[in-house]
Image 1 (cartoon, rainbow, N blue to C red):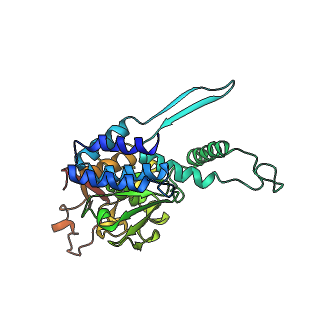
Image 2 (image 1 turned 90 degrees about the horizontal axis):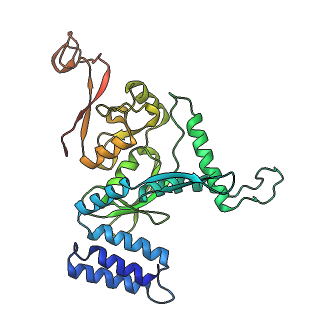
Length: 317
C-alpha cells in the first residue's frame, strides 16, 4: 500500500472520532517515524497505525468494529488445481494471532523431513504451514473425549500493566504485530497459553510469567468432572472438550488459579462473559436447604451438595 497511504487512511478513519489536536500530534509522530531510510518499515508502520487507531477511537467504536470483524470471519472451500482443494480463511486479529502462534510452532523446517537422512527439509514454507495445520487438526480430533488437552501454544502479548488492569485505555501487541484489545488479552489469558509481557510506566518488563496463572491438567480434570455438562453458561450444550477454564475473579485482578475460582466456558460464551462483564459464583445444590448458609444440620459447616456454577447475567455485575 505504501507508507503515505497507510498514514492517510489512518487519518481518515479517526478524524471524525478523535480530538483534532491529539490526532494532529499522532499523525505527525507517525510521519516522522516513517520518514527516511532509517524509518519504520511498512509492516512496522502498519502495526503502529493499528495501535494508534485503538487508542484514539472511543471504546464503543472499538467494540463495534471488533464485533463487525468477528461477524465477517469465514472459511470458504472451493476447487483448486486438478485434484486439489482450496480453503480460504478470513480472520480477525485475534484469530490470526492464535493460528500464527499454533502453526508457526510446528512449521519450522525439519532436518530429516520424511527421509530420515538428515537432509534439508525439501518442503516450501507454504507446504510446511499446511502440514502444521493438518497436524493440529489430527491431534484435536484424535484426543479422547474426557481427557484434558495438552498445553496450548504460547502466544506472547506485550501490554502495559495499567491497560491490563483496566485502569486506562490501550491495547496489547503480539510478536507478529497484531493489535489485540485489552479485553481480548484478558479473556485469552484465562486459559490460553498467553505469555503477557507486562510493562511498567517506564516500559520496563514487570512480569513475563506464565505457569502460576494457568490451570494445570489436574485442575482441568477436576473441572471437567465438576461441570459435567461442559460449558456452564446457561443454556449452552458445548461439551467439556470445547471449553476453556475461566477465572471468575480475573487473575489480573488478584483472582487465584483455583477450582473455587473457575468455571468452564466455550469460546463463544467466554467472549460474551468478558464483553458484558458477567459474574458467577460457586454454589452447592444444598445451599440453604439443610441448614443456614448451606451447612449440614449438625452445624458443622461442611457442604455436602454437588458444587455448581451460578451465573449472574446482569452486565457489569
